[in-house]
Length: 436
Image (cartoon, rainbow, N blue to C red; front, side, top):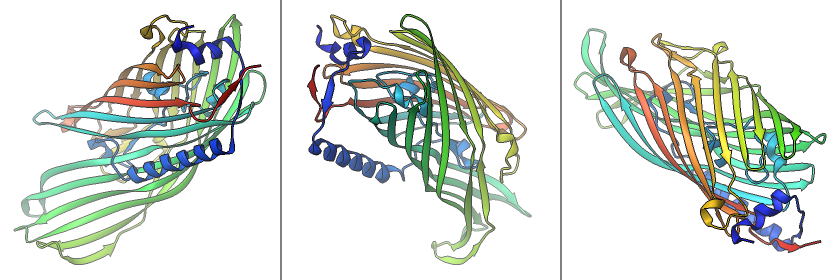
């Protein structure tokens, strides 16, 4: 038997080796989890993505994705995989099969974005942590996961010259930074043989700051308006999956997910500085409220022993929400995505034959109409999963391209290239095999 196939062969053949875990193993898993989340909280203050469109609302919203989802274009409502995590639908947490008893996953990315108008262009490169997750089982019918990932991100700086009353050529600077992160606990339950239900409980925390600075007359003083959003909120989302077997080792999975939306409160403070940056006056502005819409999605996926073909359709009711910015109107969005997964051959006689491949596309109408302009947000992804340590762990590499915006009416066209690396460790610590 080739050394790449140890774990995959057991999964595909449905063999069930038993495991026992010592107290020291449980303590080690706990300490590792605390360490991972401590690292995550330390970096949660960093901006995750750069975009001029994060000036609106709570910024750019980030989907909760695993390396499997990212490689398939964000698809996953109906995906069930016995070897990889899927965070699009919490009902899928129970699809991981024996002998896998726990999974750690951590992802990093580097992004290069270009921003273009009809007259100007600029580019920027940044990188950060994308997610950290730990999956385990309480019982054969109850699976659970804890994770940390970005929820929304604000990162922009825009300079412009405007007229203020009778005074021309006043310098305005718009700057925003910060992000909202989410710590979540997800659970999946096998209700019937082919029916599963899942629920995520998320704690959202973080601070987003937006400022508008005006250099007054001879620039001896400046007026700064700051809008700061501090949040500590609980959010719920749920999902279901139903498996329809129709041929040997083949099945059709139907999935559904839903989220009832969430409200945020923001505090606003105004500052007046002089040329030496000393504070001349402060005042408190009106309270602001931000809302995120309810959403529902449905997915279909065709599963076989070696591949998955899946597609998702998701609706978000942004049209019922109001935005505080002028020349901005929200409207409902539909997001479509499709993805393909090819599993490497667990009995491959050479390493490349054991590598898994993924690809996907996504397309949606953006939820904001800016200066009466509507535009889309689309992209594609491709990735590979390279097995390590007898296929018990893997290093996953994903490339994605995204385009957001338009050149119409002086707006900005943004194109982004991302390279992501996810490390997945499956039951690496403490497990001792005892075959029946």
